[in-house]
Length: 229
Image (cartoon, rainbow, N blue to C red; front, top):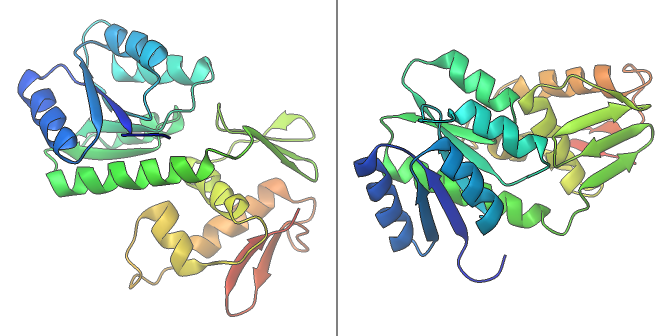
């Protein structure tokens, strides 16, 4: 990205949209607002933002349909969805449709800014990467967030996909469990969990010919994991 990052806010609540715009502009971002799903979809195509903040409850086209349309046309722009408190199903559905992260209303400004910064940083790191990556029998299509083995699409959860990309991004270097917890789950370094190991085991089951003797997702003893092409 060159210059200020572009952020498209798709939100029909005027006060909230204005508040987001003002605070994002104070942080140095270039911001545009769309008040309907249809307008948001059109602006995303014309303006080519670096990030979309997308409310799910919108007039004309709801956020799910906007999200689906963006991914269907191959737009890999990072998308942060805004969900209502307690609507766990909406979060899961949004992530499965290709959203990159979410915040729950009402949200704190610092939390939202931190998530925006993290998504833009990740997007910038990915920018030089090819949209299609391959290793062994695996093909990764980033624009549609799909992974294939021998040409057949695999059913990965959003976190499994993000974990795979985090390993791929390191080009064979070791990723520690703490790094993966921070990058994929957003947890603080102090958090100790078997979450990473569980997701790695599931990734191996889906990607490897023999999960008990993996060729690609390797354990580095007392360090973490690395991806070998």
